[in-house]
Amino acid sequence: MKARLVEPGFLYGNQVMRHFLTTEDWKQDELQSILDRARALKAGASSSALTGKSVALVFFNPSLRTRTSFEIGIAQLGGQGIVLDARAGTWPMEFEDGVVMDADAEEHVVEAAKVLSRYVDMIAIRCFPKFQNWQAEREDPLISAFARHATVPIVNMETIVHPCQELAMMLALQEKHGRVANKTFLLTWVPHPKPLNTAVANSAILMASKFGMNVRMLVPDEVYRLDERYMSAAQENCAAHGTSFDLLTDIEAAYSGADAVYAKSWGALPFYGQWEGEAPYRAKGRDFMVDDAKMALTRNASISHCLPMRRNVKIADSVVDSSAFLGIEEAENRLHVQKAMLEALARDMDLRA
Ligand code: CP
Image (cartoon, rainbow, N blue to C red):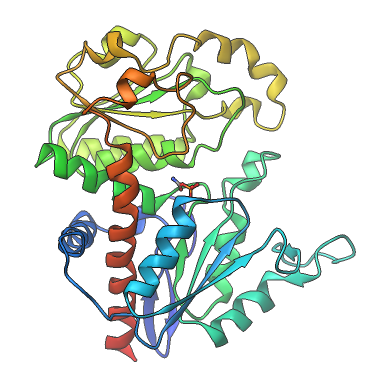
């Protein structure tokens, strides 16, 4: 049996309630219902699903899109969002069990999760890995601890996966391509001056494979394989749909005939926390920026990125400024898909209250 990332649900009365931690816990038809509802909200449907409800938005890392879209979306649903900046506005937090708290942390996640659960109806968390020890950080310890100790739904605003971005990406792909099943999705590693989180890359292959796309990953070297949990999950999804999953290092083979390109940079896991050794492999990817010549190999593909994005390092201006670029649409979609997802969690609570 596959190891679980985090707890998929919690007891509410005697009912199991759901979190939104990873799309691995949600079936394709459930996610499609969220996407369909997001389309209706984007088209102007109104909703008061969060009237009388509040959501804590706990940020351990910076954000432009996530914070803005959650705060506005919650207000549009009639609810109240409370932003807690965990780097400056709250107590430094410990999340391991059984530690002697004689270092910097003043608060343990056990109390934080239980107390916030008394005030708010949902807790959303952004907590990137610390880039120190992947074997520990791949267990997503902070959000897992919140999920264990809170008594309200927990929403992932990006940890080692980024499920809200996945929904926004898939909505943008469906808007552009219609039915995406059997189309070819290329996740390409792109250059960046420093190693980045693998969350969006993990999420991109999870979502594309779950929705029946042929998935290609283009990397400068196999050291850029993602964690086996996500590689295996994506391969299993592809096998279930009868689609293909390929890890490629050849640029031309990867781009040829692709329908959708997704650009992301990430650090090579074998060098996690000791990045000096990654430099020669990163140098092998110096020609991996998305440009017109590469896009010309595709089947008139769309191109997207989660943002923020370094222009002319990851993607050339001419591509970003072309009609193929879906990054702005995808960013707008964050608002709509998150509202639809929060509605679904709120409906679940109301039905079971
Ligand atoms: N894509 C995304 O999550 O953007 P922010 O980091 O600005 O929230």
